[in-house]
Length: 78
Image 1 (cartoon, rainbow, N blue to C red):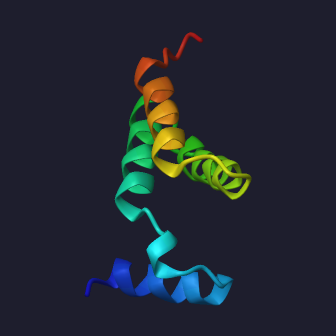
Image 2: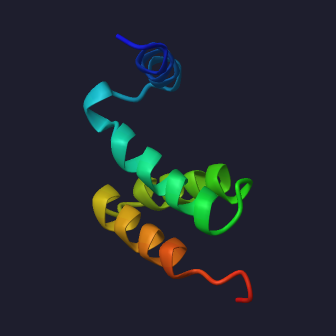
């Protein structure tokens, strides 16, 4: 297990989240897209927003696809 895996497992346990609920690669891909195409500080905030949406019933993969598409089409002039 990597340090990232250890951290995610510990943080999930602390928050009462089951490991099977985690979509680590999906979240990492979204944060990469946002950090590289929008702004680095927007990445953790976007992850939080995505988490709120998923917590309210949004499908994680669908939410990630929407956010990635938005980030990849983002123009700094927007």
